[in-house]
Image (cartoon, rainbow, N blue to C red; front, top):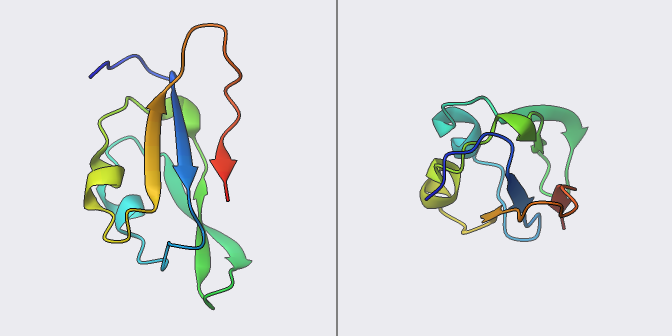
Length: 85
């Protein structure tokens, strides 16, 4: 696993996510935050607020009980857009 800051894409599958906020709690880099937007499940959704802080540790992905988070290393020169679906 690489530890290059800002070289990772973070994807949250909103259909699978139940907004338990474990990703917010376990991320040592403060990548995630609760939004003001109430999602389809009646809870505030998580935001990928600081993707540039991601070091690819995958703690969020590993602790997500819904397998709703995917961390992917971004190849040099590739679009760094974060994805939520």
